[in-house]
Amino acid sequence: MFDISPSIFILIIFGIYLALFFLGFPVSFAMGIASLVGFIMLGVDLRMIVQRMITGVYAFELLAMPFFILAANIMNASGISEKIFGFAESAVGWISGSMGHVNIFASMIFAGISGAATADAAGLGIIEMNAMRKAGYPEDFSAAITASSSMIGPIIPPSVVFLFFGRSVPRYSCWPIFNVNGIFFSKNQASKVTFTKKV
Image (cartoon, rainbow, N blue to C red; front, side, top):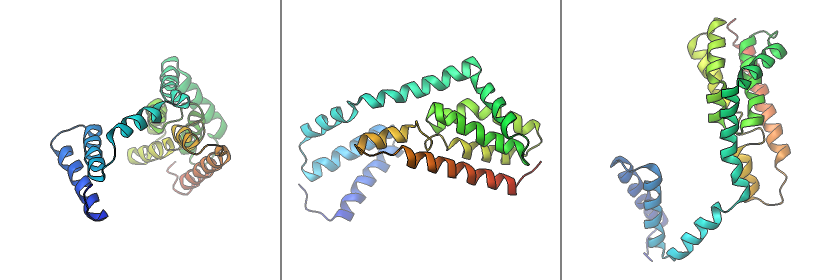
């Protein structure tokens, strides 16, 4: 174990990470090697690290993550994404600044199925961008609404963040918190669209 101050320790680890990153190592390898050097400097038994790594991913709940991505891909391939967008358009398309509201509402529905921001952006992003372009919205405004509405994915359950939170904090009912936060986040976005409506 090295006798150094915490600030110097952090600088060394961060310096190793940056050096490996700029040398072209993948991010996962750079983080892993920097962490390994840190554990050696702290005198941690390396056998315990391997054990913690195995037990950390040995969780039945984490199987839901690849199935979220699979669900989003199936929805894209089968045309369900277009139907979700059509439903959102019929539900909130009458509001002033309609396509922005449709974008946000469709992302809320998709978030309840896919659970990830990237799946939301990939699944509905092209549909939403094309619809807003046809409605006469500027490209930058459409991209901003689409990108920000896809961030509802990790907030509304079921989500990847929800799974990790529920896994790390046992016996804690986090469902209401995520639901309320997702609804408030969506309402905040919708109010901004109303005040900055373009069409």
